[in-house]
Image (cartoon, rainbow, N blue to C red):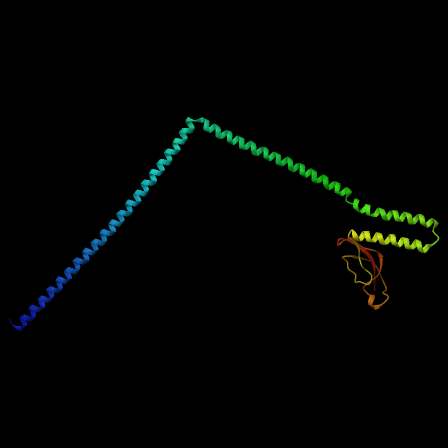
Length: 233
């Protein structure tokens, strides 16, 4: 065999070997693909089977529930006593709630009337404590007036009147009544009421209160009477 023929023979043999290898690879790929397809098909079939089983189970459960409901309906139809009993229970519950509601309304109405009565009584007798405190002062004033008829020592009479006045002031203070300060202060319209203006005795008293015509008072911080004052100009 010539050298050229040997080379050609070698190339043909090489091509055959390559073709054989390619055919084997192709067959292996086809086999692997077929196995994958078979596995996927099996998985889909198993999923469909599980879905069908669950649907079947749900259908069976629904059928059982329907049978139970139909049986209960048939029992109610066959046993009207159950229906009558439920109506009686409902009527008894309704009567109980209605009675409770009426009782609550009656109790609330009584409470409202009682509270209104207590407020009216408190309004009428609210000043009882104050009047009881004033009575001793009135007694002392009556004694002082009687003593003026026969008194010869005016200084003793004045001293007695001053004591009565101080006690009365202490009583008013104990009840929360306080005198509003005014002289020498700036005019405060929240507690003062300017009646007139008068020339100030000094430059420092200009615009300030120089005299009080009528005292003002507060009761527990609330103004019960404004102080009537004279303002310097």
